[in-house]
Image 1 (tube, rainbow, N blue to C red):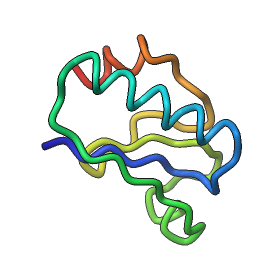
Image 2 (cartoon, one colour; image 1 turned 135 degrees about the vertical axis):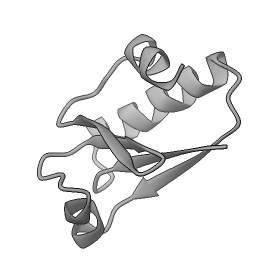
Image 3 (cartoon, rainbow, N blue to C red; image 1 turned 180 degrees about the horizontal axis):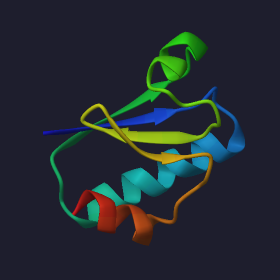
Image 4 (cartoon, one colour; image 1 turned 90 degrees about the horizontal axis):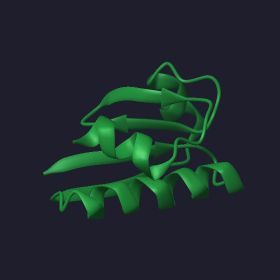
Length: 77
């Protein structure tokens, strides 16, 4: 199971990234868990200073932008 984490405080961009990640994972029929990390100290522990960010299995893949579901499918696939 992949652990997909959205790193952000819950802003509109963070929500959009979460939606796009969910769409991408569903389109690939992945077994995944989506977690929203909203605590700033936790976000910074990933080395992320600009939100939104996306981490998969603890590895940061995107920082500071909302990737499309197509872009995310390529990263997750």
